[in-house]
Length: 99
Image (tube, rainbow, N blue to C red; front, top):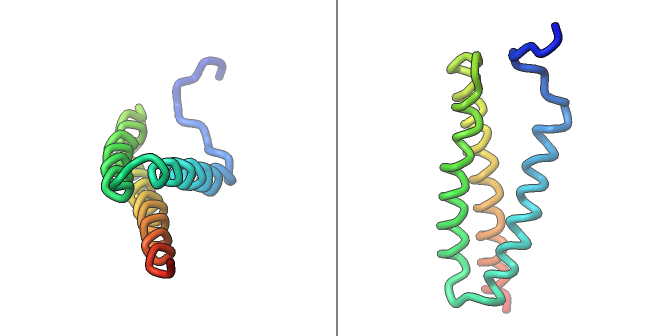
């Protein structure tokens, strides 16, 4: 049906590529914060929390998608955010202890 408004399947690589891209951008952003701010961890965590809250707008604005799917997608956003943010902060903390 041409012009249908129903959901379409997502390419299988998308759930892996988007978090990897987000992680790369987050690492670059944190590197810039390390160079130009006095409290990079605090700024980074604040920006990450705001980005996580904004990311919920995507799944919850999907029309004609069951609530269970929206909650699952939001859970995936939380997991990706925790792993990316936590990984960057823990890695930087360990690197700072070794110097």
